[in-house]
Image 1 (cartoon, rainbow, N blue to C red):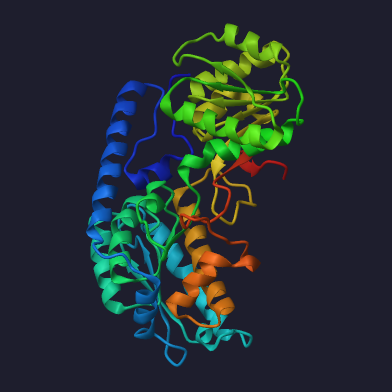
Image 2: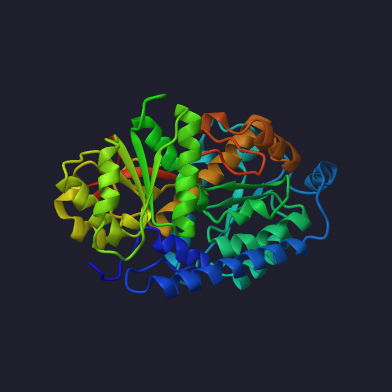
Length: 415
């Protein structure tokens, strides 16, 4: 039960320089993660100060005029890790981008003409701050029409203010840390990726699908009072109230206990249709088992840390019946079953989606000039790709989705 677990978001959090909690030493990990989060926030704020000049729309248009025009080859740069621990993601991004460009060039319907003329250069950011700073300096000197990528959040946070100061259009892709768009403060930077702080809201959407508006009871949210769990619970409650007009009953537990009979009794008394569990997998197994022992058959929705080998092993057959786990997904969603969500899989999908979004915006704007592309993304999006953006520049997309465990793989719920 207390073996260290590798939650599904482990690889993604590694890209941020954070650690995921293990069941053996939660207090030490919480302390390290808290320090890492504070350091990341401080670094992001410092990076934002680097951009001394805020690019206005007129300045962007003036710089765009000096760049590639319809009569020239349009240079697109993708920044991705071609070396280091995330090298596999960068290699796959480069291969997929090459295929996409070849298709665009071969299409007789490619309009405007630059979509048959553009080239894509892939540059290595090593998935590090130092690598991203060096890559951004190189990219700015190339004066591209757009920069796409930096899927590692620390790299994206480092590069973003440099692009903003230089007036370079930047589509951050795959970088899920909330501060990527909180700290940019730029009208010419966008994020095509989910956000790791939106698991609660997406869980709330799933809970709302089980609830009946105005019905008594029906939904229970269980959390262990930690900051992360409370944040997820609050987000889910907020969305549930907005969608159904009624919130969930909240039941709290204390982590590391071995018996949750009292909490389970409260849950069972509510006769819920669905339960959200925001806590550690070890406690999740205990609560799930005691619920089933008391005859409760409500849908059990757990947060992403439950997508671990230890949870599956300990829960056994219980994990196959009416149990769902929220997992991070690319902006385009996840259709095929997966063994586990990985940084590589999400990064590749988001970077290619960003390249397609830029191509779509160029097509709709009728030109690759940055000011026109920005206006299209900001005010119209790319409707045929289902991509629009909010005021912060974040793509309007689901960040987490429910999955079920069957036959050794995670399947999107309902498929």
